[in-house]
Image 1: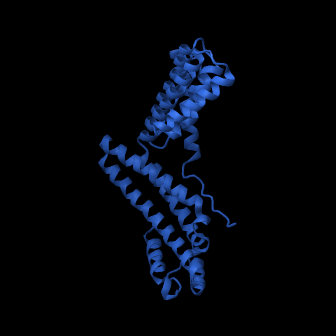
Image 2: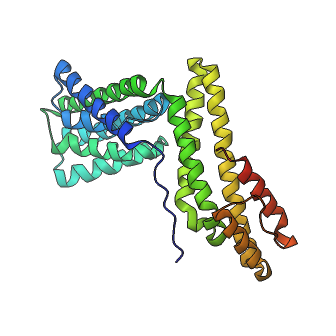
Image 3: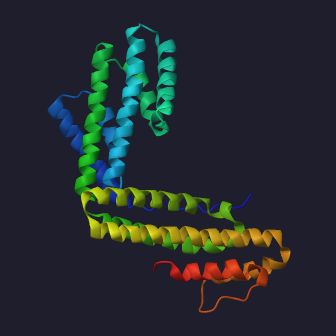
Length: 291
């Protein structure tokens, strides 16, 4: 089995810690104002709604709310019918999951399942009252996460994504020789990190479109193109791995190029003509990577 390079996250753990702490604090303050007795749910879901961008946070909050409604209705319905826990909870959880999948919100299934069992296992009065408590807690969490995302991250996209692109570039530079030697499996963590970065940039660019931040949006579009360039370079390195595996005569050339990628100098090594094309494109892609 080939070793896998597991890429660390691109986010700043201190920044995330601050936002999570603020979101839970705000949720607790809102609980005090609204009289919500389920602070466990409101504070925990508030942390789940924390995100690098406002739009991503809104989508997470919507997912949490839809999942809670789906699970809550199943749980409340079975509780109202007087179903015992051994029957009601599994049935409600199963129904809640099927509902989220039918709505194409598969990522909502954990909160849907929790809401379904919460309505029956942790009653707050009757089924309707328990459902009201659950939805109030989720709404409180969504508002808390949204406000923290706006106040802490909303005006800091330039710095947030600038740092993430720098980290991603460093990861790809370190991963290129591994990809040339071991193929995609050797850099699986880097692929997933790049996919996350590109997804976050897509949402940030979309959000800035309706926020009217044209200059910042153009900057992040440039970051998005740079992230695509990182992915292209990684693809080219993997292509060389496959060419060497198919043709033993090119293996030494790929090995020499991989060694050069470990510490690129001014001139890359000569390689067999059969791999000159992808090798040249890889070197060009390497020079285009952001500093």
